[in-house]
Length: 225
Image 1 (cartoon, rainbow, N blue to C red):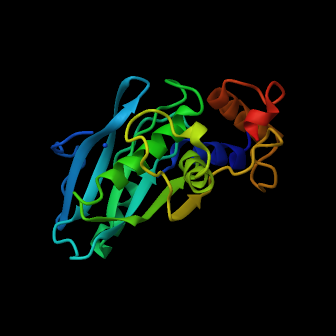
Image 2: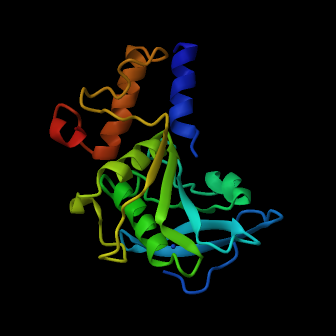
């Protein structure tokens, strides 16, 4: 296996960047000037889904813009902490890292349903946390970038909303940052055009996405599209 291929696979799979009434202490270490909490944002597959919240100790008087961080890991990882967006807290942002079900637990579209739940939760609780509900952005890397991009492009697709909580609340986002997320799966390789990926790398990526969808590209190209 060639080094560029190994690097790309590791990069894609590893790097990446709630309905509780009273937030519980965060599992992330406390940082001066920052308040943190871990909350239950709703349900996914019949179990609780959590979110890591971080906000300034002395927040601005006006409602804060918010960033939802979506972790990567080839849709295989369930590690949503620590919150990758918390670096913006000292600039006056409210940030949230959302949990979503891995494809080991639930196949597509569970992952985008859980991310849309995160947006609905935040919008429904905006007043409680002094968040501007009209200034919610999402940021993700790798698989998280894929999900962030889909949040920006599936506003009018109710089939991706799921039933985890807060029905009727909009899951629309106002900004998207997609960091090295796959954006076009239609040819069944995910990595066409990448200078660091050879045929072996494309085959591995195809296998990763096949696990997410539980369908090979040849079996259901419309789903991949």
